Image 1: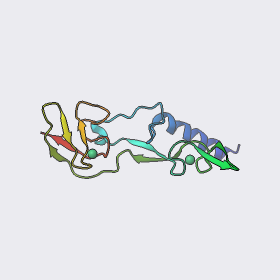
Image 2: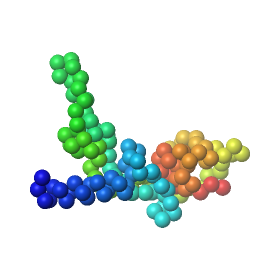
Image 3: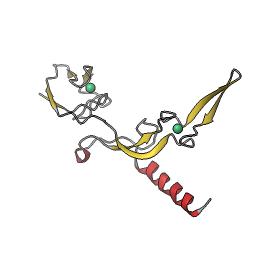
Length: 133
Ligand SMILES: [Zn+2]
Ligand SMILES: [Zn+2]
């Protein structure tokens, strides 16, 4: 391994240890904080394998799972991107008595009591910023 390749390898390991992956395939948890407007930096998924790091090859009716060529099996391009693509301005939404609201960004109903659906500022499904009233 050349010096440059080794340096790149170390940089990549640091990135993997520090940033979560867009696909969630990472031990690093996604944290939504006011510091980054609930839009954390994540490692972009490899567009070729959608973050899986593998591709399914079928030759002569036999399927085999190989490492993705585009990312060498890493599953990420190692580019840092924002987790949510939405930069739409915040919209005021009223939640019902049970804490359910309809997202103005994607029209889905979600529970404002579920951390998997609601970051406290953004709808997780689409990233729409919402002010609950
Ligand atoms: Zn890939
Ligand atoms: Zn939404």
